[in-house]
Image (cartoon, rainbow, N blue to C red; front, side):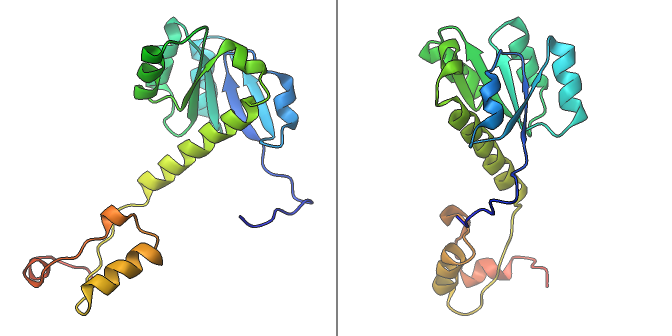
Length: 175
């Protein structure tokens, strides 16, 4: 990771929240975070629609499932639950949440790190989905090309495969 310039402040991460998060998040080295409290479903959806949000922190309640379904998919979603059992945590994650926190974890020293990690996981997933699909044709050493694709183009190993000459003949390739 390149060193950061101490004279350039990192952009603040915008957190839309229903939960009562500590004000100390504003000065966290994992942030800085700008908390935007919203009461009620309509206020949360309006703020998300305005754009520029990095995360949504939801209280585990009746509105949470609906909000999770309607929330913008480009934001990290964390759910705060009183005492989540493993089945509930897995259900929230299956619905698209990046993390599930217990209420007592809102005051933990690890909260800023967990919040930032959820945001970064969401960014990575979003960016991976936007990469698209690419096809390359190599008429010489296909195995060497696959190795280059994995090492230097940093393509996922599963996306680099070689085709037999007969398969190449059937592909319509852009020039």
